[in-house]
View 1 (cartoon, rainbow, N blue to C red):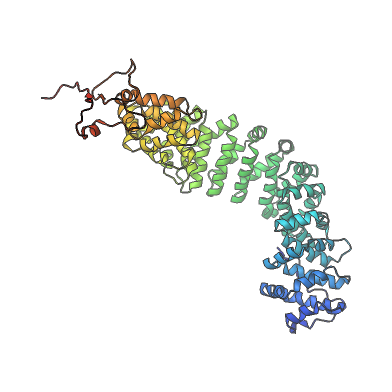
View 2 (cartoon, helix red, strand yellow):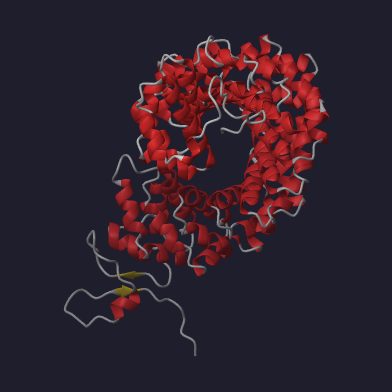
Length: 610
């Protein structure tokens, strides 16, 4: 900010001789700002301008000497030369942070805006807009500029013949439109035509600022309509086709990216052949920022079903798949996210699955954690409700990379990798393969996660893969039953439901059921089932399963067994256990001293070995 477009010139001297004030101390020059003589005032301001221009330290010196308070009175002085020179000092000093703070306290915006009148000197325009541009970084100043009617003169000055005035006004507008209220206001003041005209400026800095401003304001649909009515889309596409304007391509794509979010605009671009031009440009570009921003724009646009159809017709999948092969991690992440978004279209899902799954599986082995997460997310979207894509993951040898992803640091990557494995479990051959790679042991870590999404997916996976005794034994030996039982305490409904389901599955084995009871799962499930809000269909089934596979505890707790409960070796009756009391194991009971209470009955029908 404050960088001049044209070569900097010395302040106009007009009727004054070359100033000899440099030899005077700044304190003396500041005192001269109180002089009643216009010539002295003009010369003092000129000297202060030169002094402040040298470095930031000098600006701070003048601030400490109270120069700003005097200058504030002079920017509205009746003498045009005094006024001009005072505004120049303001403009040059406003780059300093402390100066900006004092300018806000002095409430100078209204006085500066009044200096933007068409009849004022172009130098006043230049430095008044420079000062406003420095100050517009602050939200409160933006509000004041808006309330005091500053937008209209700033937009008018976009057509100034002086490039510095244009640049400063444009920079100020760019900062102002970061606030949505100002975006609506500049639209009403017809800012689009002058902004489009500035795209043909001979100064790249002005072209860039114009594009960045268009990018911000085109986030609003109403602005996109006006942009279209003023042939703005053609202007933007022409920039992309011009190799000499390659330094503007990233910003141009950002504006077009916003236009892609609007169905009507996208249809218009498609009908005029603009979308095909755009994709052709993107396919040959090797600039990472262009590739990344294009993929992000597609992701945003693809949330609309009609837009997804149009993008599919134009074979956007081909472009996205090509991005997965780049050497830039940010591009790979953006492409993977766009693939996830496009999966909502069934036809796109088929195309992307067929060609993209092997590439996404490879990305799971990336050293970049963000790339892993984005690839795993894309695989979730591709394999959900798609048996063909599930088979493609298995054929691409994706199981081992997915298992390895469970050890990453990013919760999103872990949760998504588990989800893909769950999707794979829908096919019988994949279940056995995944189990053979130690899925139950691998899930012990995610079950201990503090992230509710990871907890939920891990519990779901335990239920999905704990379908045979060996898998349940593996989880028990890996210490996974403890954290699983803890998840029953979760306040998250989905985590609690999936944990109940997993406990029900694991409770199918007597050893696991006994262990879960020892870990307190039975007590927690009873507590859950007493609550109408917390209980679910799995919590009741899990409680029943644990008791049916731990008959000694069931009889002690309930006082009866069901007709389907068959007593086997190892059953014992230690009497009724009161609620809240711990149910003791045989080993714990054997260590107790003998009492006159009822004897414990133990069933041991095994023939003794000789």
